[in-house]
Image (cartoon, rainbow, N blue to C red; front, side, top):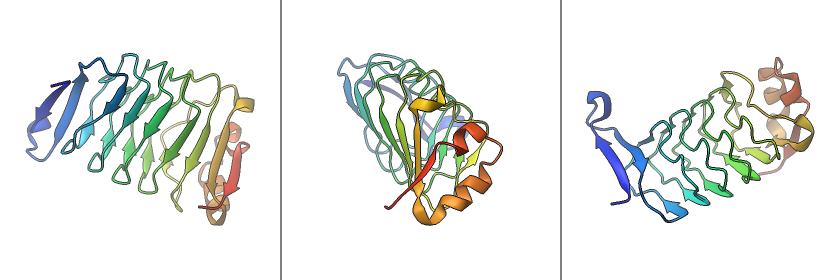
Length: 171
């Protein structure tokens, strides 16, 4: 009732997409059975969101403009995060990137200028389609599993502002 949902997205009967959140509750729990979140589907003042297991892709700009978002829970089933997904989510201070994420779009945290701590849980670094959008770099922390520190530094070598922010942590 609080979601505009499209089943059979792009002709694939197995894909179920949230097109838009129409509810008023600032604390959102996406229903089970959804596999993707569409572009700009949460461009409203929400404070927290739980993304359920089964969702594999966050399309670009899914949470863009959610300036009050303070908490996001991402599922282990997630494999791709589109560009600018968390653009302008200035209240978000911590994010965990699940271990199965293999691809991250450009500038996923663009214009989140107050900084945050990002924890990457995968032992293999996701492919970056561009810098994560961390600016100003001095207010950001990027954590990766201790045993994978060199892999991340090597894979992301061309993003010097990002590599300089990487710190190890134990899962």
